[in-house]
Length: 257
Image 1: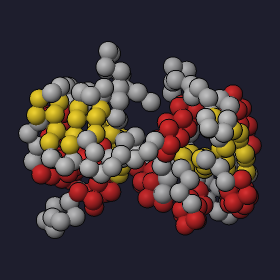
Image 2 (image 1 turned 60 degrees about the vertical axis):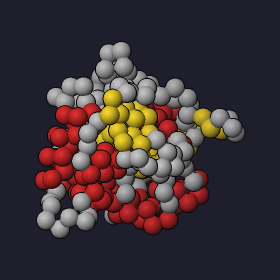
Image 3 (image 1 turned 120 degrees about the vertical axis):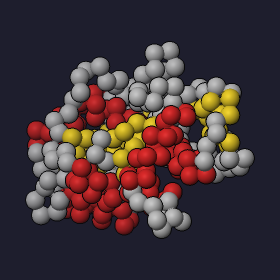
């Protein structure tokens, strides 16, 4: 990704004026140096660990706000570390992988990772992902019954009335289409694997399978996207699943970080 990626502005907790702590775990000293240099510029406090054991120790000692975790490491790989972290903490995790295959990415997400980056990556891309994940975690979850507004109020989802409006006009959705949209909208910015969506939206339908997700996403885009071939809300994470983007620049249609 090129240098056009928006830089994270400030890594601060406003109330306490304390830098947010990022724990980076990787056995590559050059990559650790790159991560530390890049995120320190964004005013984060960066803590580094060169292996999994040290990473788990520093996790307990420093209680970071986010963990950046490499997959391919000796002794304890990233998947095992991620699973161990999830037994004791809900701290957001971004996984780094040089593999980039569907199975490896899905495995990381299933282990509890919140996001991933495929190496090599531009430092600005890392900064943008860190900023986006921390914003998402800090954002208070709306009540399950509260109307959800996206795209500056362009798209409104009312869970109680089971109504969806686009530009003030009602959108006719089937029960499954609405359930799919609501499930994704309640998890804005997160990568949702096809399997995760299927297990949560189609759990009542024994005859359905994961292929239904792709079909219903296609149908849903036709109804809520102004251009279903260039979607702004439901973005495909190729080979993995989908990501619901809550806001985008309404002037030029570009996605927001």
